[in-house]
Image (tube, rainbow, N blue to C red):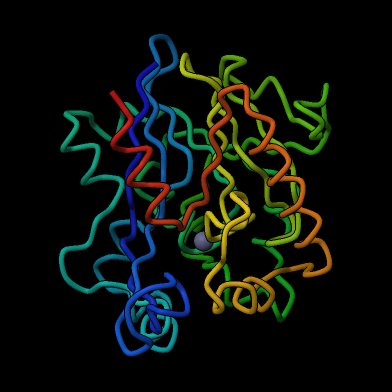
Length: 274
Ligand SMILES: [Zn+2]
């Protein structure tokens, strides 16, 4: 399999120093939406997370509101989307047969309408939250993103654990190299997505953490913890989740973890990809 690390949103949130830990508070920060494009030999292209879609990029204010766009820093010019990355790689949208989403927040599920033929793998609890959000959850999801009726494949039963984590295995239509580890906290049905590559397991942690310092045990910029707590569906779980991820990162064995939104992790992994 061939794995591409791509940024499908290229966000620039306010207060760079608080989010990235360098620069000034007045500058805008850097926050990718780190997605995977996995070319498999026998199962077509598998995508993990999608960033924003074509319609989001064309009218972000209309889709998400001006306040969200200002705070999160949704770019109005030079938008990057999964479609543009696929084009650059010489792949077509029809090549994408499977999409696995860590969760359904707007910056992870935005391109689902661009791939109506793909099977979308999601945790059952996340789909329920997204389709029937509470008042507090309403702003994190966009009903536009599933108005086309995606080919959902939902899961809740767990199989044999993976490195101590409960695991969902045997995703429908996919080889065993793809599995998911339910880890709610950021959202109701958030899970991690593992791709067992030839170089070792690659773990897409979605928004289970935001800054590499969380799993590396190095300083985390001061704006990150309150931001994570603010948007968590269950903030009491965050510290425990972080501790477990730190342990997993330290366990070695070639495991590489990454968050959806850390620009340095994206740079490192993209540079190391063949
Ligand atoms: Zn996110």
